[in-house]
Length: 136
Image (cartoon, rainbow, N blue to C red):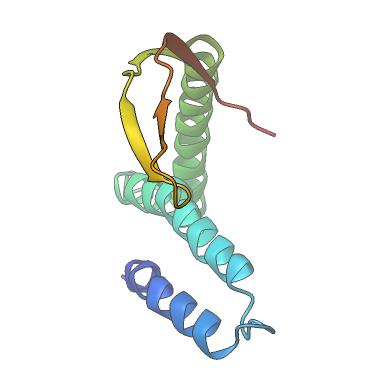
């Protein structure tokens, strides 16, 4: 619950930090944002699944065996998810999005005291954008 509140209250903190300390910055908010989001990622991907897997282990086993069983199940689940994400990224990283622009003529108005108006026309074209996800 703390991470939910932290994410919700980060935006007003960031605005107040930039408002009161425009030149020096006060708190380094880029680092603060990264810490909050990485903490949430760790909770969602490791701690919560591990707690659920530990809860589902056999209570008749010793504590050490229960901890190791949950850790093995978590490792297997993380490996499967990472393989699925990598394969999806390798084959589905491009998206073809058709886009159409429209030609519009408009009157800019008078530039000087004489009565000459300048008319400009935007050029229309149809293209397909190819988006590519680049990861470091």
